[in-house]
Structure formats: C-alpha cells, structure tokens
Length: 131
Image 1 (tube, rainbow, N blue to C red):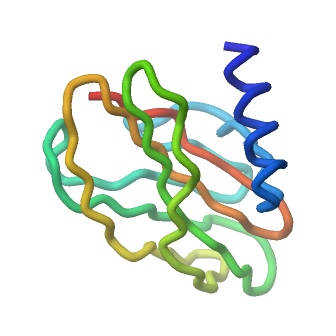
Image 2 (image 1 turned 45 degrees about the horizontal axis):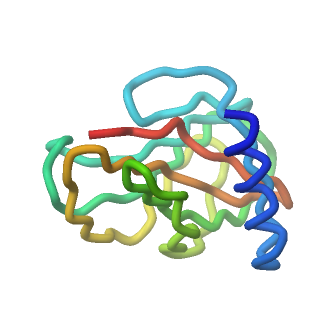
Image 3 (image 1 turned 90 degrees about the vertical axis):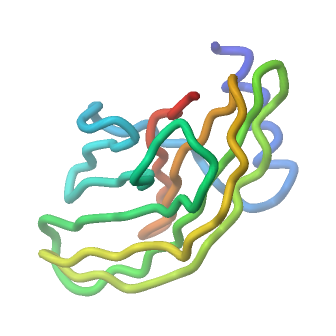
C-alpha cells in the first residue's frame, strides 16, 4: 500500500498537476468521505454496472464561496490508477451542494473508481469503490 501511494504521488508530481491525495476523514455511505466542512461522494444510482458517474460535494459549513474542481479516477485490477479526469469547476457556499458533470464508465470485474476534489489549494479523494 505504501509503495502504491509513493508511486501515485510521484506520478502526480511528474504530471505537474499538484494534486496531493488527502484521505477522507472517515467512511460514511459507500463511495463517500466525510470532510471537515462537508461530504464528498462518488455518485451512481446502480453500482456494479456501467453507466454515468459523477462527484457530489455537500458543504455543511464554512464561510464565503468556495471554488471546487471535481473529477473521477479509474483503475483496473493489476494496473496503476489512471490520472484524474476533471469534470468541471463550480462554486459552493455553506449549506449548498455541487455536482460535477457526468462521465460514462464501462465497468468490469476488478475495476475501481473514486471521486476527487480540489478546493482552497487542498485535494481530497473518496475511498475506492471497487466492482
């Protein structure tokens, strides 16, 4: 696990996108991560099937408007994770919610997806949702 994290961080730095994988504070609903000021989720109505996925951020608290960039990362069993596919940038205030654009993924056994968000110069990810 540590080697995988080290490889991922090296890959991110090499790509120059400045993403620092920050784990979600705690696990909640499958595909979600509880953050200090809200909930970050990978959203799909019928998991374990190919289809449209999106990232949702519900901001519970905080002050002022916050610009967030949201995306999805995909990995297949036996392969390194692909780079994040960024699906849009939006602004959210405390008590508000934002959703990324949708992206269609063909899911096979062993595939995993996770959501990601960059906000306020920090990056956050959900736990992997594997199928």
